[in-house]
Image (cartoon, rainbow, N blue to C red; front, side, top):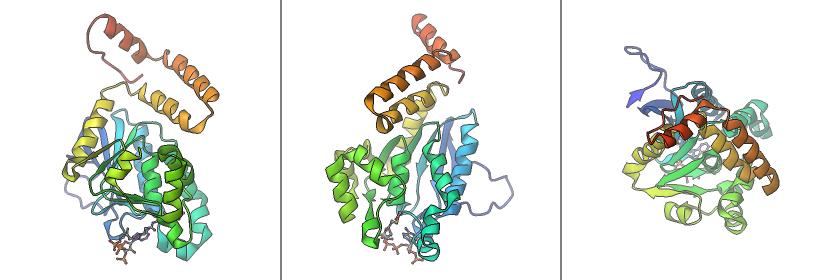
Length: 269
Ligand code: CAA
């Protein structure tokens, strides 16, 4: 695996998010604040967004895999910061803007959940388009135990993922959900052995990267609309996006390749 952004011979500062290029078209971003279980400080979110911004404009990145390290994917918002700055730690416009930028990032993103995905960590996984988990993964919205409740999308996205009753049970009790139960409830699409987690996530990402980079963001936007819009408006958007996507070269190439019984050669436009 090649590490991105560390020039040969130079000691790079310790990054809160490490980037690797495990296979063509795939960028692996690893949250790297293990001493604090990857708690989502503003600095960490800012580094994550910097990587996503560069990847958005990088034709060589078709899909991102987001993972953690040690025993955590991410253990939530930074509780120390919340205690020190109170509501400003949450309502900080820069922090909210960072979340918004992750929410609206256009390319496909896969969460490879390796350990604790708690509070804001679960909310981050829920922003990803596909969530897969290692057997050691644990999911919870434990905010209620510290006199709070999910505030970065969890109260909205969790019920959409697992239904109202189980979401309420999680939010109101803070219960810890293991990987098997998470899969059963539809929170994750696959559970794999811990040692296979990254390889499997990269395998899925590589399949996505082999598709047209021009088209996958349309597909992502259309599917996400199912969680954001009433059915009628969602299908209207789907139609509008389909019509727009007909204007891409790759759409024509895909149809032509099928007719000519050959593999398409997508150009990403
Ligand atoms: N913020 C800041 N620091 C955190 C953290 C967090 N969310 N989670 C863990 N840490 C720190 C711990 O304070 C500890 O640091 P020190 O060694 O300096 O004391 C270090 O990470 C390791 O954690 P533990 O020693 O607690 O590890 P453990 O294995 O005994 O327990 C755990 C693991 C059960 C996940 C426990 O760390 C825990 O309960 N963490 C908090 C989880 C949580 O409540 N998350 C929700 C935060 S609120 C939120 O997301 C959104 C919101 O409210 C709006």
